[in-house]
Length: 305
Picture 1 (tube, rainbow, N blue to C red):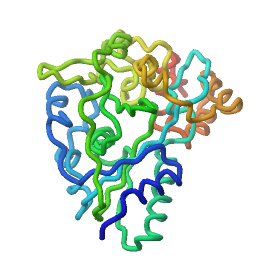
Picture 2: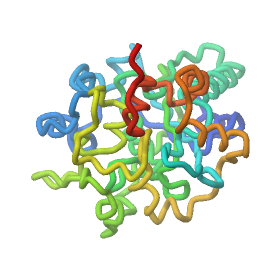
Picture 3: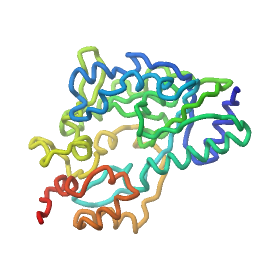
Picture 4: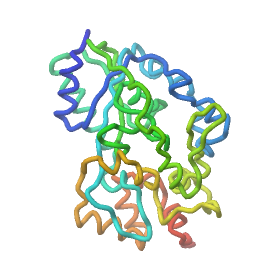
């Protein structure tokens, strides 16, 4: 079975995705995805799950038997305004949990494809399996890995959710990666990072040292205290500092609306009790952390019984 790629992309747009690209399901090269070097340098910090299934992270055929195509999908989320609080939250977490949003749209897309191709067999992935969203989006010609190590779309910047559908079907046309990248000599993201977390390795690859990163420390780090030298600039969940200065993000169109009610809820989290925090976090990206981590991140102690 061979799928009409243009028809597939039109369906992706119709269900709500901002962009779509399709790559052959083959192994990523070391040059495309220098995972081994990053791990050897210890930049994964305590994210030991990154050390598992390294081959699978490169090759989706090890993840989905018979895989022939990787359909990469982009959903832009740049909000029209930002919350105002001493406990700042990365903008990707302002709305609904992106895992739920992306999965819902991807299942809708699969259902639409099956209306014309009933035997279409595929599995959707959103940051929940050993497959690199960023690098497959690059392979599918949708953008490049920016100097801050995030995926950058030429029109939408890096304020994007990413996901992919790994399918056993071929398509009639596969996209090719872009030549070079759009960052040029720009180093705004490197210069603005308060913790110097963006590193150039000995091989010349730009990498993120998670041990220094505010986003890693406020989400993945489970220690009782944050590193004493960490400068969070008020971020209590994630961080947007390197993204906020990117020229592509500055010119990217607004893609979502932060209404007054949601904005007030976000700002109230700085003084929320545990039940209130849990209720809000249930269908939000904030569900990735515990209330005790939230208190740690905003400089408060967890109440002892």
